[in-house]
Image 1: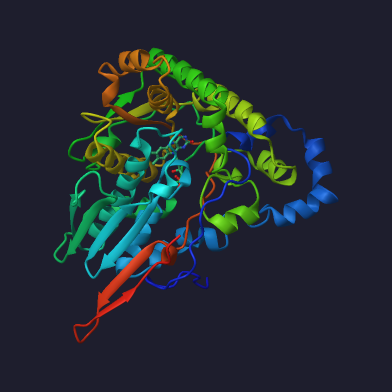
Image 2: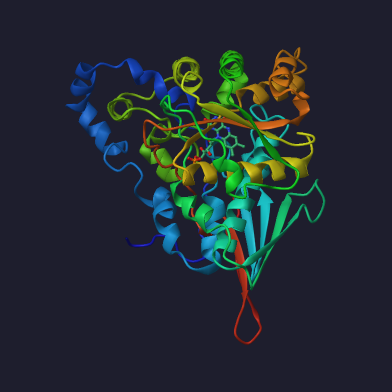
Length: 424
Ligand SMILES: Cc1cc2nc3c(=O)[nH]c(=O)nc-3n(C[C@H](O)[C@H](O)[C@H](O)COP(=O)(O)O)c2cc1C
């Protein structure tokens, strides 16, 4: 494949996110579409939309190249690219990187925060932690050592982490690194096979300051499932919160190509025929999408979860704890991938807890969340379901490295060469 991703440091205009398309929830009003409508839509106008809307090129083209090219990328590009391929909230990719020889700095991009869906910033900083951990794993697997300092300029700063690479690593984390280009959020149904959770302790899935609480017991799963559905209903009833989420959905291929971020139909865990129909038919409204999301949460996501995991930290409002929790989340997701398990991040409950607190609403979720965790609600950072997948998840788009990275390298005569990512 011809690479469209030059090495770090080649500037190009950065794309600013703009609202477009349907919400992550809205992907999916299509489950009830019959074969007849799909066939009809496939003819005439539908055929034109199919050609322009990514029916025939899902998972290929510029926004997806990094997934395909990562395994053969060289040196430090490969380490930074591993960060860009990390899971992150709403695929906002709210990160920027500076690279100075063996030092990689990770910065938050505050313009990509979601104040209504992530009022405390826990998901934003957890997502940055996911990028940090993916880079550590990639670096170690390549024989580097990786020393991480979180918030080297203090927790008020956007400078989230400094990663210093060194020689003399032992090649640890190779198995997790191999999972990096295969890890995707799987929002489809899972089958009834129980999950063997022992695999998560075998693979060195530990990060200081964070742990995973597993909820596999049937009664607890059912209670938690009901809480997720209720929280989903609360989000969709909150027009402002729902509208903010809607701006990160890219329903048309041209929007994916333009922004290279956000959520799209390919990542929604739809069956092949349903996804085909969804791409052919006109984009759904926010409210239709919200209705579908609520239904999918009830009938698919919670109904087929084999187990839930909650990342536990001392204090979910602490920035360092949020990043540490994200690091463990990334490690857990890669471990699941390496074990052939599907993982779907689900944060409706904590999104509502933070939203209610910020908006001054009555707190309707914390007590039941705490009861399910068996500990105070302020320790449950982010959560997810796992299981054996019935469907292969689609790829999510990624922005180009050259839009995200500012690099300076020592030249052979010791002078510094500097190349900057354009500002957006
Ligand atoms: C901290 C965090 C919170 C997330 N919350 C949700 C969520 O509530 N619902 C969901 O469907 N996906 C959630 N995701 C998954 C992201 O949407 C997903 O990682 C992103 O779209 C990129 O897709 P990928 O994981 O397939 O690469 C979350 C991811 C992270 C790291």
